[in-house]
Length: 546
Ligand code: GLU
Image (tube, rainbow, N blue to C red; front, side):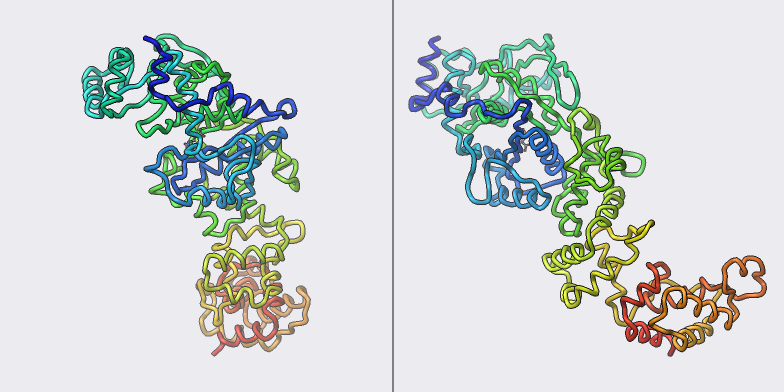
């Protein structure tokens, strides 16, 4: 067979050559050790936590090494493509501080290694495949869908690996005349790799996360160009990662199984493969078992969820670092105030098995992170989030920013700061009582306080209330009020002689607390009153007397 003739027959208009591509996209001149990484999302319109996880690892690897991080849109499957999905992804990642050095942007493309949308790289793929055909490493295959179905059925019946390989690769040896005739008759075809591997022979390949992998050689005549002339993922990413000079490919573990195909393609093109790093899947605990996070079942899998719930981007980023690198938390304990970007991330410390995503842990990390954000900044974040998400509280929050700042700042200073605030929707419900008039009680009064004592205690409190009291003077008044009404001024007195009292000062405080906040638990009551102001404080107490 004259493969050159076959190549000309299939690609009569392709003049570009692989050599020209090499000069068009030369090796990058970067400092030694610089990593070139990329994100290669398919624009399907669903941006999930896994995208952010992989984006962070790629971004860290490039940034830490003074390398390059670019965005390539893998849009060769027009059936799955959702208009505007690339833009949505860019904005979603931007929210978390993920910026690309090159690639598709909101306003066109930037960088010298484009086009960065695979759908616009047709001539590059064609010229590379033409070369493979001319070297006898690829061939046209006209097998129709029904024929492929039959092949699969017979393989399944014989319990064999499904696919076009070995004796089933019937069109490997089609004579040139046959190809010419079929082309003339307008038959559709794909271009397949002519696999040269042996499934009994294993090769080893280093994986940046998993160490050395041992895998069988590829025997599948996989599709390189589909019927529509567009490349498959296998071929496109190999071509692109070589010509875009990617040094590290970080992608999900679902691609490990097809790694032999990718290595065979690099071999066929005489190129050196990048370092592949296969990440583990994101899991969640459900009862005793762990399972993969699912688009259908888990709202928290979608990135939109975190924005809608009002998580601060730096909290999500900090949490992701804890699950990306096993030694991050240790580092954080030693460097409590450092930017997470100062941490040296390594692929070798990434999880190889399922990565457990834990919402409670996210909330804990978030509380810690929010503590480091000044109240004024937090107030601005909260109101902006409330506004963008159409929260009905927005106007009220914005009407007095100073009031909001003081609320958010309660108990955050000193040796043992409170860690109450985790994210927008939680904060709004946590601070709700500052805005509710009247306050709706959420909790019950202490059981040992007779109902008829409530107006008496609150009436006495109101009478003795001095808004200018400092905290100690204020509490002394509550002690006196307690004693006057049969409650111990100190809990320990009550413990010693419970038969002498109805309860103690803590019960009296709870009655006041419920009148002021509707809750049994709240930050410091004196501080709350100072923020509410005298009028509001008195009005709330008075409302519970009548
Ligand atoms: N387009 C592929 C995907 O969305 C990208 C895999 C890769 O990063 O190579 O899964």
